[in-house]
Length: 179
Image (tube, rainbow, N blue to C red; front, side, top):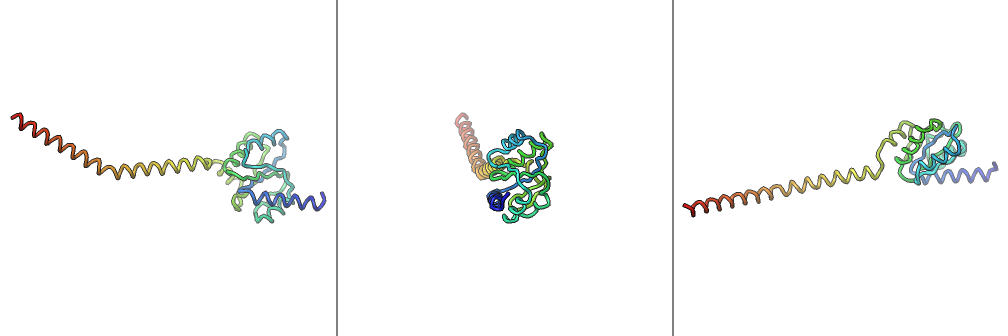
């Protein structure tokens, strides 16, 4: 490959690293083209999966300010550049790797921090951002209802007490008139 082509490839990889919220480095040895197509589909629309050259990827990662990938760049490598929800992409990679043991997750980067394969699996175990937000909203809503109940309880108790006194007075007045 000529130097301008390598420079263009490094520039493209650097831009992908900078634009991504996360990147997961994998080894794809033994996967067929059809399986790679299935993997790209499993990642969804928030990640791109690209086969990369190790030396060019190492240069691009350094230029993007990412450290910790150099030692993992050995053998046939591919990178999943995640632009959306990293949990969804991690789940897609983990599930695909379970079904296809030839895919090996080597490590990755999330928000500039290096991740081990175990940490990527932990990330995949998390619920999606939408589910976590919905749970938080439900918890806030429950606390608001509880607070509203606590604020309304004394007033409701006072109303019930007044009604009970009124009924007692009416009963006493009725019994006096009957006598």
